[in-house]
Length: 240
Image 1 (cartoon, rainbow, N blue to C red):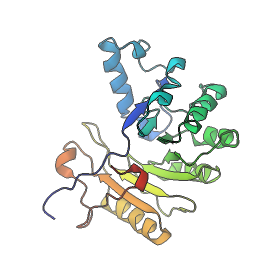
Image 2: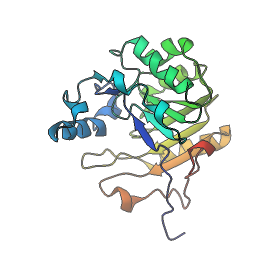
Image 3: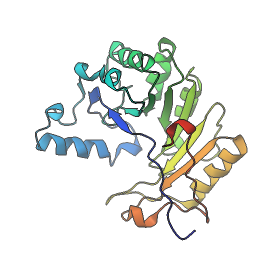
C-alpha cells in the first residue's frame, strides 16, 4: 500500500463531568489534557476557571441522557474518573447515567486501577461500558490484573503512550489492546520490537489489536505502518 489508510477515531463525544487531574505515572509527563485546560482557562471557558485543578461539574452528569443519537462517548478526557479525590458517590452517579443510556457506548479509561478495582463491585457493568486501563511501561502491568479482577463485560488496554517494553502480558479476559507512540515536541521514543511483540501476543491470545501511530514530532508523516502492514481493526461498536 502506498497510502496511509484512515484510522477511525474510537470516540466521538467527550463527556467531562470532572475536569482537572494530577500526575500519577510516567505516561502523565506530557499530559495533553493539562495543556488544553490551561489554554481553555486563558480564553475564559467557564468550565476551566480552576485550570487543571480537579473540579466536579454536577450539572454535566446527566448530559448523555439528552443525546438521542447513539454515540461513542469518552468519559473523562480531561480527567480520570477514578481519581482518589473524587467522591465515590459521584463516580457511581456517573455509572448510573451510563446504565440508563443503552443507546450509547461509553469508553472509560483510567490509570487509577487500584481504586477502579475497589469500587468495581458497586458498579452495574452493562455491556455498553468499555473499561480500560493505561499501561505505558512494564512497571504498571499490575493495572491489567486490576482490570481482569472486575466484572466489566468489555475490557481493553491502552498502551499509549507506549514508552517501554511491556514484556510478556497475560491477556486473559481482555477484548482489545490499542497502542500509540507519544507525539509532540517532548515525546519519548517507541521501539518497533515493543509493538511487534504485543501484536504477536494479541494474535496468539485472540485479542483485537490496534496500532494507532508511531507518534514523534512529525506524527502524521510517521504514520502507523508496522512491518509492512496496518493494524487499524476496531471493535464493531467503535466503527463508523
